Length: 104
Image (tube, rainbow, N blue to C red; front, side):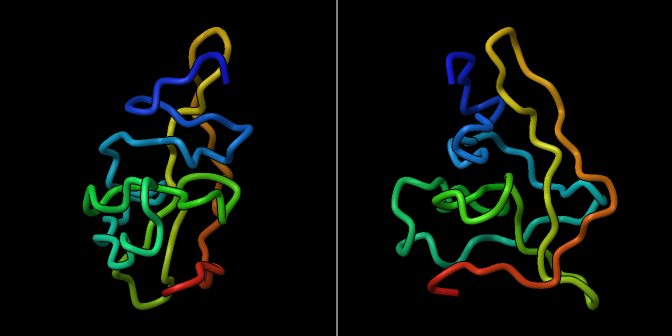
């Protein structure tokens, strides 16, 4: 998108797969786990540690795995890049229990 700034926001047309910021907390305040499959998704920013990402656009927006007894992942409130700046995208109470990520 024309408002791209990977360190600050993610573009909606690629489901925030371009996001490379350091947000490491989900929309529900859960801490992200470090990614363990960085080699499977080169150039996805997974080697950056416990941060929100969307490798190859496998989900609707940026997310991460979490350490929680009831859920395995959660979405992150990453700013969405827009042509005139950016905005926060939140889906409310959506918390994931499973995500289709090949190689996990």
